[in-house]
Image (tube, rainbow, N blue to C red; front, side, top):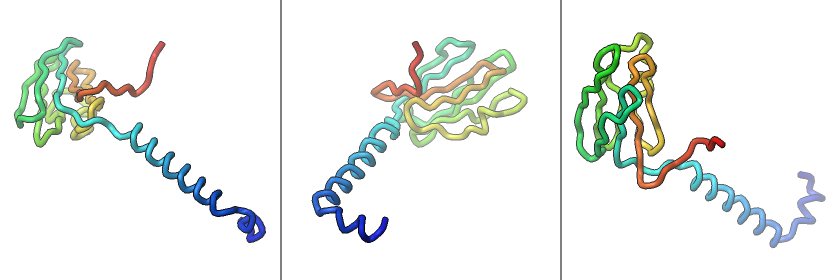
Length: 126
């Protein structure tokens, strides 16, 4: 900005800009931060195989058409540790920790989704 323009901005204008910027930052953090997950929903063949709490470390073997996938739960996080699918996309996805995150192994029809106290939506369909 030019010096002439800055001269016309009064202290109340600066306060309004500061409060507006802080409001935008708070709303952004509130809407984009995920809820903490407390359970994992494991599906096989499109049906719920098991719902497990994230509070206990464990490994769960899940059967699929190509073989067995292994879901690992450690330190309130979950991941697909191994899968017989050829490209291993779901294994490479890594650890999931926020509610709403999901890893899907399409060839083996196995998925793990984290859920929390509130349902978060990525998008809404009509």
